[in-house]
Amino acid sequence: MRLVRSAACPAASDMRIGTWNMDSEWKGGQEPVLLDQACDIWLLTEVSPYFTLAGYNLHMTRAVMQRGQHYAGIASRQDLGPLIPRLPDPHPASAMADVGGRTYCSSVLPWHACGNGTVWPGKSQADKTVAAVERLLESLPRQALIWGGDWNNSLDGRNPIGSDGAADRIMKAVEHLGLQVPTRELPHRLAELRSIDHIAVARGLHVAARRHVIAAAGGERLSDHDLYWVEIP
Image (tube, rainbow, N blue to C red):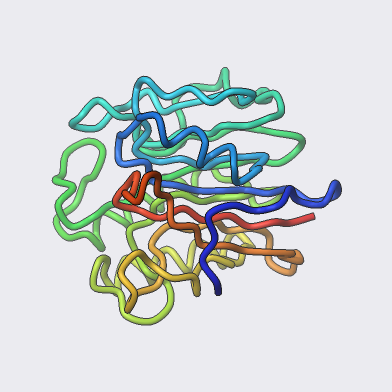
């Protein structure tokens, strides 16, 4: 899969959905990179409290991380539907919204150094991931769902950033929800690994395109994560 910095607009009948862990940064370079991808929906993670995006409606988690960044958020060119007044979100580290008859959920899932407590109960990363996924499954619908974000696990090949137990539980949830993960074979920022940032769409749905994008400006990366997008009907 080739790397791209920009892309033509999707076909009129397609939806382009992107995901990016923004590492709490909001400088001059992020907005042009986001707009350049022509995504209809963004499933964002680690979002700066100062984040805005021209032409998009926003919903962010109430819960924030150590630097004050929102765990997750959704940016949509269309209006955000009636799920927004239903609080809380399905998990403190997940944002959920209804857009155009589909439910979108953006999630941060546990990483090795995430600590524990009310957001991440459990001892190991696998234990914490099981707890987070079980809680999400109480709210995520099994129809018309798109689920993505920073899952902190490669779902194909080596998984040193995550753990086998965590990846296995995520994939079982994906199967239970009737989803496929077209981002699972896309590259990570580290060349020998696969992505840990994902977008899952309905199983059997045609994926018209999928891309890995190095998000950079002036020769410097804008985050410690690359960004990804997929196109679906």
